[in-house]
Length: 199
Image (tube, rainbow, N blue to C red; front, side, top):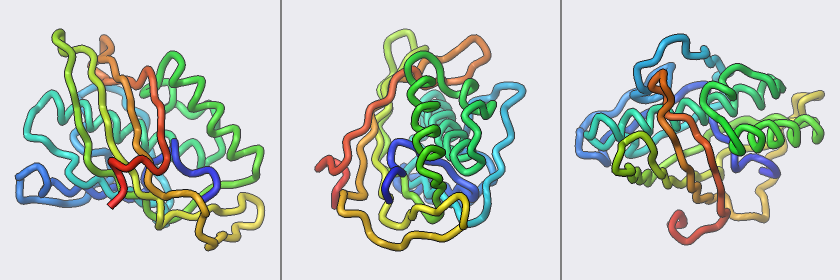
C-alpha cells in the first residue's frame, strides 16, 4: 500500500480475545468494548474493508475501555477515508488537538491522490499504560498491512502490487478521557518497519 498506515479502520471488525486469556473470540459490527458514552457516530464500511483486532482484550475494565475507543478511532479514520470525508463526525469524536489535525491531513492525502483502500489490516500486541489519575493513558500497538491494497477512487481499480515498504507499523498514542467518558486520541506517531512488530 502507498498511503495506508497511520490510518486503520474496519467494515467488519473481528476481535480475538484469546491472547488475553479469555478463550473467546468473535465478531462485531462495532469496535470491541468501547466505553459507554452516548451519541457515538455510526460507522458502516463496505465488507471488503476488514480489521482484525488480535489480543485486544486485557481483562481490565479500564484498559479494555481504552482499547475499545482506540479501535473505534481506527474505524472512524477508515470510514472517513473510504467516504472521502475530512469532516466525518467520528474524527472529532475520537480525535482532538494535534491528533485531529493530523488525521484530517492524512485523509486529505488520500483524496489528493484519488485513492481509497481495500483488504484486511491486523492490529495486535496492544499495550496500555494508565497514568496515576486514570484519565490519561499511553497505548502502543502494531499493525500488519500486508493484506491491504490501494484502490483508485475514480475507477475502482485495486492495485495488487506489494509495496516496497514494510507492512508492519508500530503506533504510539496518547489518549485522554473526556467528560463524556470517551478516550480521545490527542497524539499519535507511527514507525513503519519497527522491529517490535515484525515477526
